[in-house]
Image 1: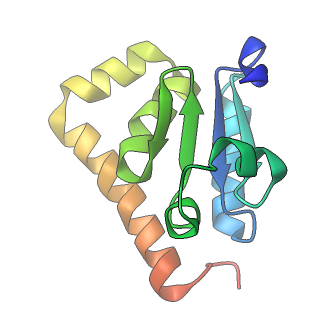
Image 2: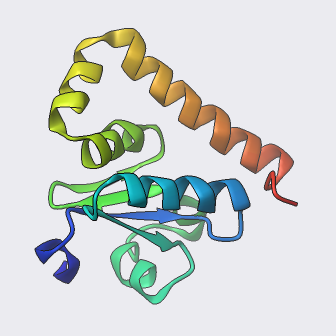
Length: 121
């Protein structure tokens, strides 16, 4: 992954969804340049997410780090670690209701997007 020389991770998101785009760009900005947000429909995504079926690829956000690919509800905690730092990630991991709340919030947002469409439309 050539971008790992200057960035720690790449977040793949639905660029056609206004709230998704807003959250991805906010995470990129808050990460102090450790994160690159990239649309799911891009040449980079074609390369990095080639092993996923179209349903898997477009069915959730994905985070690619040197530790591998995290998708769906497995992704938010790793994303928090990239954005806020490993200490914050460890604290959230050790407080079960915080980690659970983060996963539930992600699941709620992606379920709403799937069931009702993009909130920006």
